[in-house]
Amino acid sequence: MKTIDKTKPVLVTGATGYLASWVVKQLLDDGLTVHGTVRDKTKTEKFEHLLNAEKQPKGKLIIFEADLLEPGSFEPAMQNCELVIHTASPFQISGIKDAQKELIEPALQGTKNVLDSVNNTASVKRVVLTSSMVAIYGDACDILTTEDGVFTENHWNKTSSVTHQPYPYSKTLAEKEAWKMAGEQDRWDLNVINPGFILGPSLSKRTDSTSINLILQLTSGKFKTGVPAGAHGNVDVRDVAKAHILAGFTSTASGRHITAAHEADFLEMANIIRKKYPSLPLPKGYVPKWLFKLIAPAIGFTRKYVKNNVGYDVKFDNSYIKKDLGIEFIPFEKTIIDFVDQLIKDGLIKIK
Ligand code: NAP
Image (cartoon, rainbow, N blue to C red):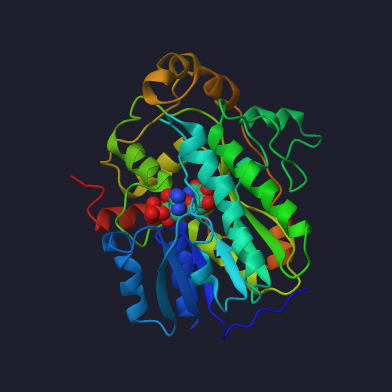
């Protein structure tokens, strides 16, 4: 059991990201001091939304430079912090050229580097790591191997590799390494957040986040002929940020946390958007699996990915996070509509 002093700064790695920006904003709104790391301090366009967010709230934001691949680079930002929230990690699911370099090294070596720095920084008492549901399962068809037909925190992804599902593999290796390093000492403890697919309004106008990009594609007409079938876990970005903060400050919190609220597929999302924005070129049905398999390589997916993922509905048990952190999830319709409203307001989706 750990009590974290809220008057001490909190380190958030990868503060520019879609999720991390909300973690930073909620901490600032609560009046805390945040040490946010960015890869390049000269690229102010990547984090100006955080500086704007700092203008109103009660908290204080200090920006530091750090890179996952540079050992020791997080140490200056970690000074005096009792809580480290490690979210930085590349998130890419298609079009990967060199999985080892693009995904696995930054995720695994980055987690090692951040935790080596935690070991060298006496003030740190707790680390909250952003893992993923993909560290729980690799392919949607893995659901068939579960005893009760649902994924729980007891499951681990055993089916991904550097050549098949490298992003899930990178998250699995990173989370396993974090548990190993946490178990080798007893000064700091580890809490892990395992989000499903994160959706909801973005604090920046960046479009390079996979979550944002996917909704832009869904509303652009690219999937007008249909979307692949198969429900997965979805969750609001504001709830995932809140889960990180609760996992940081709830003294009794422990373990892995499935952070997914709603089982839904892309057609269900499109149907919610269509009700409010009927003029958008949204999909009205599912693309047949054989057709998706045929075109998969041309759109950055392997045929094995399609075989093992399309047409399987993923089910999960999210009772632990509700009990351990007391979280209540935002309704799915609100998440989707707030997301699309923000993208329209920022000019990223055009309504004719
Ligand atoms: P994002 O917007 O792409 O943010 C990723 C962050 O990681 C960015 O701040 C990026 O910095 C940073 N980063 C990447 N490589 C780095 C490196 N070598 N050194 C330092 N920082 C680096 O993605 P996100 O969706 O917010 O994802 C945040 C976390 O949530 C990740 O750990 C991801 O695996 C996890 N997650 C996401 C989802 C989802 O649906 N979005 C679901 C489950 C888990 P730059 O700004 O410099 O690029």
